[in-house]
Length: 270
Image 1: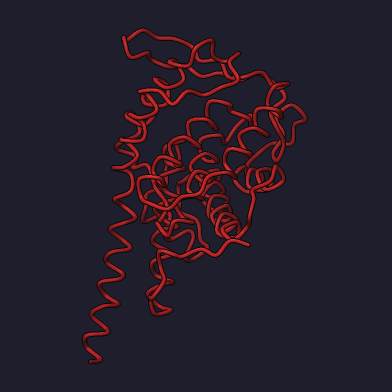
Image 2 (image 1 turned 60 degrees about the vertical axis):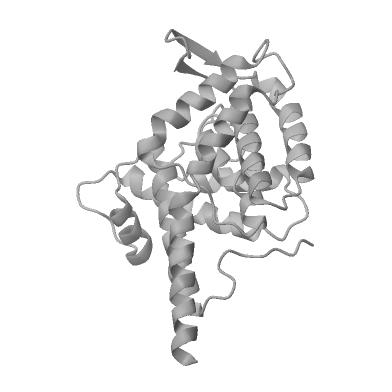
């Protein structure tokens, strides 16, 4: 059983709860907004805190918000586990895809059964299509991904950022699910961050283009992709890790403010 320090350690219960809500709101809003969700940060907070809908906004968007928040709870529940399992991934995927239509070719909580790809613009400006590994290769590739993921031992901020970047890039390059791969990557890759006592890394909507371009640049740099079974620690991977360092700030600001309030309470009592 892992023992994990938490970014909210040392806070009074009310400050801890407020901080966890702020982090949940940011994490949920940013990750779903990247996928096209229309709810603002304030609306996300309202839906999650009050359990009410926002007039004029799609029902699908509300479901995505609620599903992502439930997935965050599942992630916190994995922190003290020694190893992440395939079933954990499926459970998380079912939480994320709350609006999924039942379809044997598009399973929620199961590996993809049809090929998938995405449009991308290469670093030289040309348009291209990135094809992901075929469905029949996913079980083997994800078994290897889980082995690498479970082997990570993070003891510093730099190692936490590196683990986030590598786990994230490899996951989205395998693209094991028919949908929800980005949200899943942004959830799972934060486990090493949280285990290191850091708050989760979030991708601000205003950095969406930089984020997607960096991922595409990495995937386009992999030799013989998607047939290749290995994922290089390339210049593009390093560039993505450097970009991720900026993504730490939004939640770090929340954490630092909560701890300043806690410190002020201590001074007032002395």
